[in-house]
Length: 307
Image (tube, rainbow, N blue to C red; front, top):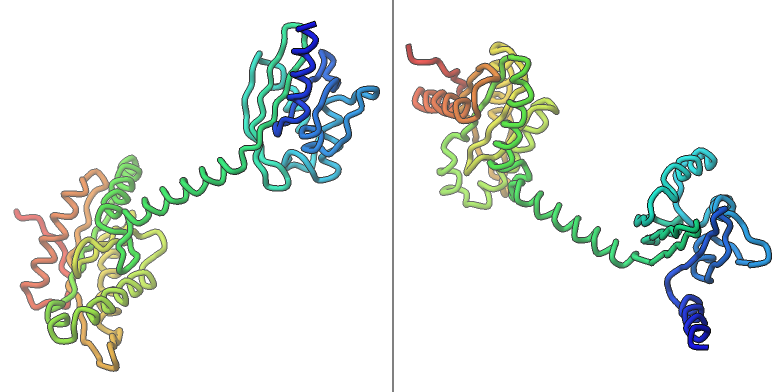
């Protein structure tokens, strides 16, 4: 008597549960389904006419309901499912539905062959998970992006260059680093104000983006200083790019509140083997930049090792 009452309570629980429940027999015929599970696959459960697992899927697929199956060949998809279904005593997996909901499915296989399937709605959890993931990505982007110019910041620039150096070291080619320093930038801030200086920095960033190649690495590494990493390139080609940058910045008209702000840049460059470190490249380009500024500014100077 008590056993009968317990069974009735279990069936009542399954019927009123917000989770979907189904039982498939050893021949994969559906012998029980509550309304929630039936609604997921868009069918009406009839214990007198049991349908197979394949039929439940085909039915939902034909009505564009149920599991979001991104294929034009439902038979091939079912063939794949057969290779993973009923292969373990217990299986847990997530699936998204055509209507945008997410379900957590569990399958419990009994020794006698019956398969108990539970489907739990985890849409809210997935939305929160996606929001958290997006927030983390946004914070990561902010940590690697210069707020003013939206160029990669020093940290991001260093990471990108070191990654490229690791990749190209196997080819043993030559690469170039440029360091650009805007001439007399302090006097721009003193004369026109810091908002004017900010606008100049943003405009220079746009000049860099439009003048350089898509695969070149650009970064604002501090104050009025920018850096450019050119992939495998000869010294001659790099010199031409650096000179084009210098000329483009000098030729660009920088206005702030209708006032024209004259601007030039000094550039230090070094072309070395891929096997050199970021620190070696940066130090050499920085030394060349010092020479460009010491010799009158508004020019490109190439690093020459001391004999």
